[in-house]
Image (cartoon, rainbow, N blue to C red; front, side, top):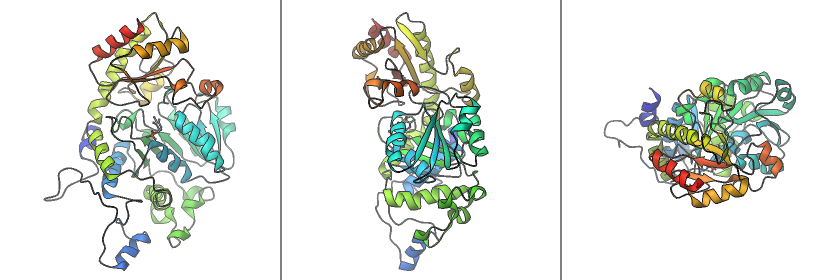
Length: 422
Ligand SMILES: *Cc1c(COP(=O)(O)O)cnc(C)c1O
């Protein structure tokens, strides 16, 4: 199936007389005839559902659709993008381990890694995604367990060189995890370029309508845990909490990561997406292939307008010829990147604040990457916890305005910007 068709049909094939639409299984629990039947589920000997804290059929149908879109072998939904990124790392790294991450990642993920996960004893080395091979090589340690980056960094709009980082990760026997939130599988499939695990904040384009917070993890099914068994004991040695199952043996390359993540992390943390939210997410995904080209087309026009304006100091949009990442974006995302643009005004931080107050169509919101055009000043909001040095290292200077171009008529968006620039 092509991407457009997968958006509509993947993940659920109704049988004779079944509901046409993915049904919402709004039930905490599931009934069995015998305790033996249920016991098999607890032992991971049979497939099925017993409690929605771990797994729910609605969620699994939507996760299967996302796995199909990303070209993965298995997927799961989480309650948020934060939960997805946390699980993706914590599923393979524990106290005493180390992760190499691109420095230009979403502020929330940076904080999760740099503050909260450090408290759990996991160490991180942040590298400039455009660092030299030597610097990248130096970032690895014997206890490194994964490499992490974002296809298009939010909000720095750095395009990640997936192939290069995948090669480096694999040379050190560890997987590459890529947060593909901004590109979506319509514009980029990181697994095709060597990524092993893909994560999403489904809150953004996948839902696309400001309706539900959620996340997803998809396994590419290619990383050979057993070939690096000493590094990943959680996958390659028996799990005593499941009667000695060894995930990599029992569920193979395609299933081990997601099964372990569900059986252990979802069981213990319970960061599950509500089935109702999964249903709404699915509605969003159904129109994803139609919405993404419109986002890109509108953003392209807005970026061109901004870069020709005398009051604008700089514009970053990977679709602009001359952008630092134009060529790399063409390679990884030939059909377009995303609807998000960042720019700065000649008057810096103060001019940004004044400009934003005058906008009428574009609304000030923490949100990004959905149907409604919205605007944000990260230094004053999402990235408030970061110091100026951290802001600059993360590619988010104090003057940066993040404009998320929606799918309204672009004439109205440009007219709004025009009057606000004054
Ligand atoms: C928003 C975002 C997240 C966090 O997702 P939530 O759904 O808000 O928890 C993670 N990564 C990227 C790239 C994001 O844009």
